[in-house]
Structure formats: structure tokens, C-alpha cells
Length: 213
Picture (cartoon, rainbow, N blue to C red):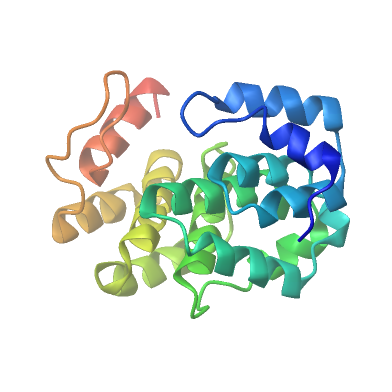
């Protein structure tokens, strides 16, 4: 794609070595919404440019085909960038419109591991607000039967969902703790200071105690 002067100007402002997320948000705040510019920045294939592009896309113009193309592009990045971009796309675009939410909610069994990650991460985000959901039993059954066979990026999101179910829905707590014990996922994994371990028995105990649940 031929880049406009404005797109080139913005690309000159960001660097993979020095740019921070706060810088991208500041630039995006000045632009607000510009879907054409977003697509130009996206075409650069640069990580920070694509993060900025996600912030200024017009959610109303995100068709299933466009989303599929975006996810295919994201899959070409290294693992760290790929997961940041897919989670950024979910949080800043796909959960902001009823149409794209409808797409997302049908991805539990999608052949794309990134789409499955989005589905499960979204389920976890719904639950970390503390609002009980009517389908937690059904979701737990799916997690129990699939998590050990899933791709790592999907395992993480399933584990995240089970963790918040265990924190806020006490009737499922023992079941979620047992899931962690049985799979052993993230047991002994080091975490940064101030962060909660991802191993379910520890995560659920710490986060539920914080909330006196």
C-alpha cells in the first residue's frame, strides 16, 4: 500500500526501541478515529505501527473478512508480539461493538488458535468484574476436557477464565483448584513482584482472600 505523507510522518515518530504504549495512546488521542490511516499503518508490518493502527480503527468497518486478514497478519509476528497484538485487538476493538462481539462469541471451537484465545480471554475478562455468569458450569466442563490438549496461548486464556470463576463463584472453587492441581499448569512459574501466580490453587487463594470471598 502506498503510504500517505501523514502515515509516513507518524511512522517517523515511533520506534521499536524507544516507543511506549503511553506514547501510542497519546498519538491515537490526537488522531481519534481514522480507518484509512489505520490500514496504512497496518500495512507497514511494524509492531508499534500495528498497535497504533488498532487504536484508531473504526469498529463499524471491521467485517469478518477484515478481522480474518488482521489475525492472519498477526500470526506472522513473533510469539510475544503476536499475543500482545491479538489481546490489544480484542480489548480495543472486538469487544466494543455488538457485531464484532457476535463474531467473537462463536470462536470457542474455531480452527484458529488466536481466535480461540480471544474467546476464552473474553470469558475471563467478563468474570474478573465479579459478575456471576449463567454458563460457568458449561465453560468449566469445556476447559476440563480441553485445556491439556490446547495450544499454549489458548491454555493461558482458559486458565485465566477458570481462575476468575474460582475466585468469584464459590460453588465452583474446589473444582477450579482441582483443575490446577490435576494439570499442574504454571506451577512454580516465577512472576514479577506484585503479580499473582498463575497456578490456579495459588491464584484463587490469593485473589479470593484479597476480596474476603
